[in-house]
Length: 588
Image: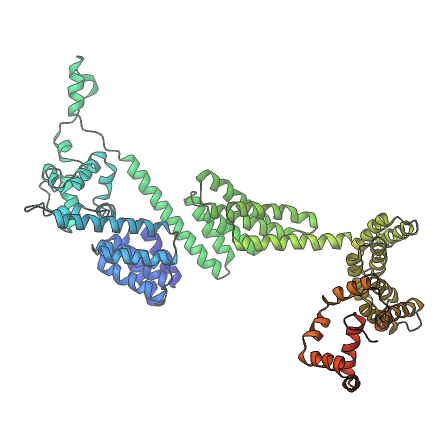
C-alpha cells in the first residue's frame, strides 16, 4: 500500500502536479509513518509549492528518523533557504556534507546559501534610504527556483527577453520601475511576493508580452511593399512568433517520463513480491514510454536473471550498455548492466572455458566503476574456473603414465625433467601421494630442501601409513642438520612399519650425530653452526628464557650434586638433553 502510494506520488511530482504528489505521499506516511524517504519526498513537494514552513517540518522529521542520511540535510537546507534563514541553511548543508563530502547537491546548496547570506548582509549594510522595497524578492537563487516552481511563470523562463529583464532587475532592483508595464514582470512579482495581481487585460494570454499583444498583425505576404526600407520597418513592428511547439513537446516528454517512472515503481513493487511476470510488464511499458533511462532496462534484466532466463537478461544488459553509451549515462549504471550480464554468464557456465566471457565482463564493469560486489563476483568466477579446470584435467590413468616417465628420468639422473613429469602427474591426480614422494626425492638431489620438505609433508598428509614419506622427510631434515626433528620423523614412521630398514638406519644416524654433541666431539666450526641453528629454534628459545631452567643451568654449573637432583626430574632432563643436542651446553 505504502509503495503504491509512493509510486503515485513520485509520478505526480515528476509531472509537476505537486498538490497531488503531497496527497499521495501523505497517504503513504499514514501507512508507514517511520519511512524517512516519504517525508523527504513530501518536503520537496511542499518546497516546490513555496510552502517552506511545511517543507521545513517534513525535512526535520526526515533528519530525526534518519540522522545519517545526507539527502535529509539537503531538504532541510532548501527549506531554510526558502524561508531566507540563510545561516540555518548553511548549517544544514554543512551537516549533510559531514556524512557525504562528495554530494554535489549539498555543495551547490551550500554555495547558494552562502551567496544569499553574503548578499543579504551586504544589502543590510549598504541599503540607502528610500531603496526599492521589493529588492529582496529578486535577490539570490531562490528567485529562479520560485519562478520555475510556479506553473504561471515557468513558461516565461523560455523567453530570452523576459530572462534578460529579470537578470537586469536582479542586478539593480531600481530598474523594476522600467519593466512594470510588462505583464510578465507583474506576474513574476506577484509570485515572488506571494500576491495575486489583477491584470488590466484579464482575458489576454499572459504568456505574450503586452507590447507584442498591442502590435498589429503582420500583413499578408502578397501585400508586402517592394521597397528596401519597408521590409525593415515591417519586421521591426512584427512580434516574434511564440515557440508553442517546443513547450508542447517538452510537456509531452515530461508526461511520458512521469508515466514511465510510475511504471518503474510499480515494477519494483511487483519484483519485491516475486511477481516477476507483472514486473516485466511494467518495466517493458516504462521502456516503451521513455527510452532515455537505462535503469528500466537493467531492472528488467534483473527480473530475467531471477527467473533463470539468462539469454534475455544478457540481451537487455547489452542493450542497456549500448544505450547508456549513446546517452552518456552515469558510469555506475553502465557498470551495473555489465555486472548483471556477468552474473548471467556465470549461471550459464558449464565448463571452465564458459567462465572466460563472464570474467572479462566483470573486469569491464570494474573499469567503469570499482564496486566491491562486482570485485567479489569476479574473484568467485576466477576461483570457480580454476576448480573446474582441475576437475576437467583430472585423469588418474594419465597421471600414472606421467609418474612412470618421471621415474625413468630419475633413474637417468635427469632430475629437472623428472620433476616436470611428476608435476604433470600431480596436476592429473592431486591425490597421488607417490608423485609427491618422488618429486621430494628429486628436490633433495638438487639441494632444494624446502621444496622437498613441503612435498614430503604433503605425501604424509595424503597417506599417513606410507613409510617412504617419512624416510623422505627424515632424510631432508637430516641434511638440514635438524637431527632431533629427523629422529622424531623416523620414529613416527616406525609406528606404521616397525621393521623398515631405512627408518631404522635414519634413527641410528641421528643418534650418532646427537651423541657427538654430548661427547663434545664436534669441531669448533660444527659447534658454532649447530649453536646458531639452535638459537632459531623456538623450543630452545623457550628453554633459555624460562627462569626455572636458567636457575637449573646455573646450579649444574656451580654444584654437581644439585645437577644430579635436577636430572631426576624427567621434564628437566629432556630440556637439558635438548640443549646438549643443540650444542648449547656440553657434558664432560
